[in-house]
Structure formats: structure tokens, C-alpha cells
Amino acid sequence: MAKKLNASTPTVDDVQKLKAMLWAAPTARDSSISRPPGRAAPLFRAASAAARAPAMTIVAEGDSWFDYPPGLDILDQLKLRHKYDIVKLAQAGDTIENIAFGTLFDRNFGRPEPQINVLMGEVDRIRPRVVLLSGGGNDVAGDQFAGFLNHADSGLPRLRMTHVKDVIHGVVKKAFERIAGEIWKIDSTIAIVTHGYGYPIPDGTAVFNFPFGYRFLGPWLRPALVSKNITKLGDGKEILKTIIDEFNTMLAGLQTNLTGPFRFVDLRDTIKTRDWVNELHVSSESYGRCADKFHELIESLVVA
Picture 1 (tube, one colour):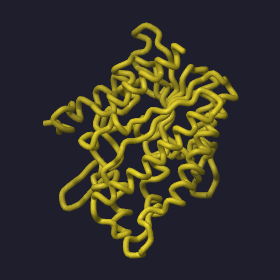
Picture 2 (spheres, rainbow, N blue to C red):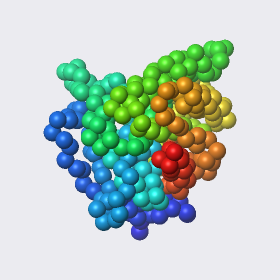
Picture 3 (cartoon, rainbow, N blue to C red):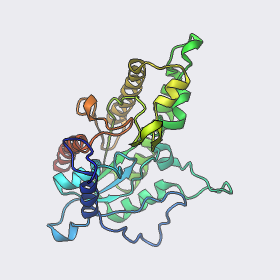
């Protein structure tokens, strides 16, 4: 019997069948565009695009909120609910720093072509009216999260706010600025739509959780908190709330200050505590509500 994701969602088998219907096999990339080694995400396109009336094509790049294999992510829901034709470059686990500048290297310390070149190749080829970006979460979570924290026994503030601001208003902001600038070199009218995140629950839940404490794909937050003797869930939630608010403040600033059409979707009120299925991801239903907010913004931009 297939395992239920939860009482209100399809089975895991149902989700995988839906995804198979939504996305065709990887399409052939233009021969002039090479994919960096180690950046294995294929370029996907709507499987059903040819079977329906032509739809607006969107290029989407980013992390697991656009590429979440165990559930229906934002891109899946945009297709299901709103019938967009989407060229998907996103890969779970990617950082916005890698997308913008390239942080990968091979075993011989060679640097592959930055992912931004692949993205710009598709933007130039397709000339979409809208590019969707999802990124920044992995620049903070995971192995690097401990660097944002002071030890609870040190007498220092538990959150290193100077470091938080340096990363979010420095590296992450510059990454968004570079991606936007390169897109607008191709066409200054292309609208860029990105998003903030909701407030995660750092309770140690991974994507797959097994008996005797075995976990797979995560957790990404609680290990760092516990390593710094920050063991109360409420303290961890407050730390994450501060970081997420800072991230949304940065995006709001870009929306105000960039000269081109750059917009962000604030998801803090859309995503509820009950929506989190692990430390970094929400339920398929919640991603559906997020997709609805994307759709509303996209429609306003296209009509305008």
C-alpha cells in the first residue's frame, strides 16, 4: 500500500505519477550551451504543452522550492493550477551564489562553467516575458548554518547578526543583482519574480525519517543549533524568524531599488506552521497556495 504524505495529500505514488505527466523527458539543449559538470539538473519542459492552446513560456531557475521530488513544488503547482509552459533549470540544493557566480569545482579543482551562463542562454533563446527565481535558503541552511550562531554558553548573542547581514545583504543580494542585470542586458522588459520563505520549524525533521534516529536528506537546521547548545525549539524558531525576516527585507529593498521589473512574493502569511513537512519544505497543498500568489503577481505584470 502506498504511503500517505498526510491526510490531505495524494499518496507518494500519486505525486510521482502527476510529476511524470507534468514534465516530459529532458529536451535537447542548444549545442552552443554547455551544462557545467556536477550541475546535473536537466532542462524540463511541459509534457502537455503541445496538446493544449499555446501558453506563455516562463524560464525558472532555483532550488528545491522549484524542484522538490518527494512532493508537488511551486512549479508543479503553477502548471497544474494555471497551465503555464515552463522551462525548468532548477535543481534541489542549489544556492543563489552558485547560480550567479559559480561555486562548484571538480576533483582536480577545475571550475566548470557557471550556471548563470546556462540560464542566460535559455533567456536569450526563449525571450520569456517572465523569469522565476528561487534561491537563498541553501545559502543559509545546512553546513553553513552553524556560522550564523554563537554558542549558548559563550555569553554572546545567539545569532551573529553582523554575519547574517553580511551574507544576506552582501553575497545573496549581489547574486540576485547579478542575475537580474544579466537578464536585463538581453531584454530590459523581462520581469523577474522571486520569493521569500516562510518561518521554518527547526525540529530535526528530514525528508525521510526512519526508526532509531536514522534520517535521509536533512535535517539542515537543528544539528547546528544543538551543536551550539541551543536546544529549545522556541529559541531556534525565533532565530530562524529573524533570518527569514531579514531575507524578506533584502528582497523588498531590491524590489524598490532595482531599475528593472523585479518583484518578490512574500510567503510569510501564506505558509502556516502546520504546512511544514520537514525543516526546509512545506506540503504540496501549501506549495499550491504559494503558486497561486505567484500567478496573481505574474498576471499583474503581464497585463501591465
